[in-house]
Length: 474
Image 1 (cartoon, rainbow, N blue to C red):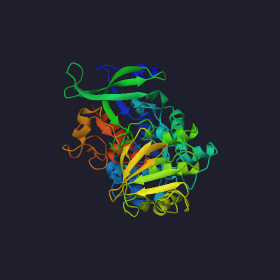
Image 2: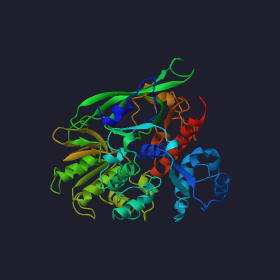
Image 3: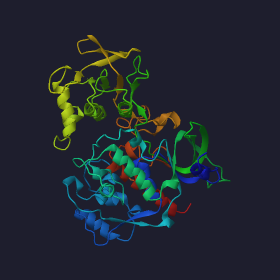
Image 4: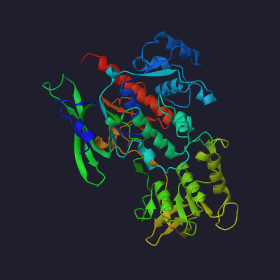
């Protein structure tokens, strides 16, 4: 058993106040807010939004984590549908959508008396899904939007003598920044890596243990150490926060041969194959399936190393729903380069993009042991291609198998399976508490916040709720 988790082994009689499942940006930000770091409005700071500025002036000495988030966020507009996300983002980055350079209006004070003991369980090291993203990939968001409170990403980059590329950064820099953040803010004692949660169950306590109508959660699973040995754990918590993101379970084609060893659903497999020279410029092509940004990242990675690529996708090239049509070309030139490749190149030899072949409106039928792939085109004709490896990058879905009925009972439509986009968890927009399960919270993509700059508002909402509940009489 890891020392960190051994220290937190709890009983039904002495549950932890909070357990956070997931150690990506949402979990890290929430841990920061629960560790006693307290946001106040800077003395003399003026927010560019005059209505918000007047509200902030009403209680200048009350922490934002103790104020009425619904009141403060009323009337705010932006790129998120979450009022709490818009509020925290505009406090941290005023005017950022208009390329303004107004500094954060918040100052941070460490007040240990406000800290709430908590535990953050992650499958890997701090950083969540960023551990699985190829380090050389360029982020979709601007680099300064990837930062967490009280340590700007740009300041960290300057400290490391690194430069942003077109205002954006590599996934490797982002991961290193998050891991540095955990150490710099002295949060690491709250984090347990290698912890896989396989059950979260509400347990109704008797009056002998807790006041009437109070209950706790039993969180159980296992930890895998560096030797691959699994050790079971079980902790109890008054509140559980789901911060698992949507990258746990890659979407699959569900066709014959998808489980063969040369088939992967993670872009990191391509980076590893490049490093070990399992694929190179003289290899058979790498087959990349998908028409989203992850597939585009894989194409750019392969193109950088002159590795031939076959790119297959089901949509038409001119489909208006393609993500490439929604990105400004000036800010995302590399993605528009991929889009041009998809449109202009359909043969291997010649043309402006040698070594790349586009297969629009093609459906994979099966993969064979001899690394042959069979496709069906829009006319129903079958085609076979020899490849060196296959990357299926068609998206992912969250894994809530540790909840009863896979979390279906928490969704907006309890008759349908949970889906972060089509049937998300039903939460209170100002506390992020699940409406169907008191004491259970959800942040990040599970709550509809997909960008790092906005997931932090969910952490603020949860911290606000938990800190206020700490002050209420039992």
